[in-house]
Amino acid sequence: MVALGTARFTYEVAEGWGKLPDGWTFKECGGVGVDSKDNVYVFNRGEHPMIIFDREGNFLRSWGEGVYPRAHGITMSPDDTIFCTDDGDHTVRKVTLDGKELFKLGISGKPVPFMSGDPFNRCTHVAIDPHTAEFYVSDGYGNARVHKYTPDGKLLFSWGESGTGPSQFNIAHNIATDKDGWVYVADRENHRIQIFDSKGKFETQWTNMARPCGLYIDKSGDQRVYVGELGVCIGSNAKAVGLGPRIGIMDIKGNYLAKLGDVPESEAVGSFLAPHGVCIDSRGDIYVAEVSWTHLSHTKVPTHQPRSLQKLVLTG
Image (cartoon, rainbow, N blue to C red; front, side, top):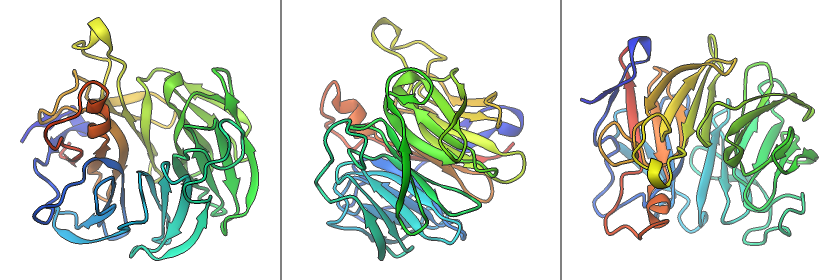
């Protein structure tokens, strides 16, 4: 196996993890989540939008066919329900582990006007308050907002606008909460994570990163933050190291503990193309969803099925 990281943050790449039925593909993976039994939910842009595996990578089932045109984000709730965010459908759905819809926010296929501030125009992700079960939606592509809702889906308030200053966003791409209820927003094209209190008041920001895209906070223990960074290599810097794409592991103060990958993009084992979603299981293994098809299509439509899902097994 190929190893990434060092010391207690050493991981081995589980090559070929995730055994799909014959003829199936992910096309690409928007997000990934893990339930209380360590089953893995892969929210993807193929014909079977939600594909579930056990932790060994054996196929269990699928659902969501015909419902999700462009899978983007998945958030697992403590009660083993799921929030599925579809930026192409402009909706957020709360569903059971079997895909039964509990409620839907937004109108399918009907975005609000660009940068209007109302929900939604290409919403991206959901985060849940660990104390109240209220939840936040990052509305990041056609808006520059965060919306806060009651547990049953009633809008409480929103904040944010387009820009580069505090409480301003340039693609609010992902969102997460820590165990104390602080709200972390991956402000992708501003190359930072902004941190807010539960009322939307700006507190601080982390700026030493390369286009944060995926975001996951382990609320146990000393709280580690896992960030999928798309990378900033362009033009003559395309083959430079230290600029991503990578998986960053940080402490709750924003200090890097490890950078996994962090070499020029490729499909080689131990490298990344476009880390878009990230989560961990109960053993600390990392799952990475990559939007490889979209990323490669920026220069040339792929003639093969690029890898879009990786498992990194903790060995440190």
